[in-house]
Image 1 (cartoon, helix red, strand yellow):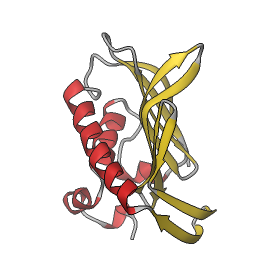
Image 2 (cartoon, rainbow, N blue to C red; image 1 turned 90 degrees about the horizontal axis):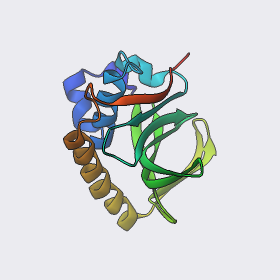
Image 3 (cartoon, helix red, strand yellow; image 1 turned 120 degrees about the vertical axis):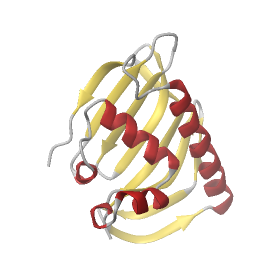
Length: 160
């Protein structure tokens, strides 16, 4: 079932908090206009808020979604933290958390582009991902990243 076949209120019960907040931010800054845009190609949004050293980056490359804070050291982005998710039919699934010099892998998919051989889930890491993504979503909400005072540094719109 794709995200388009489900009423919005019902869909919200199935998606992670981080996806809900990310969609709100992407809508606020004009990257997404409707749920169907989630199924389109790649997009990229880099934001800055005054008083914050870190930049917020939301991106989709292929089937991987990336949402995270980055510190830029000599133009090299260092995740602090970044959440990597797998996008399937408009729903995002936990993959890993990337932090400054480590990462927590919560699941691993073999194969590519819908032809998955198996899904390996690491339960204790998945639990850490769930708690962390919930806290991160609350942080993004409380810091107001969907607000009008946020500066768009870079934006690439989704294309079919």
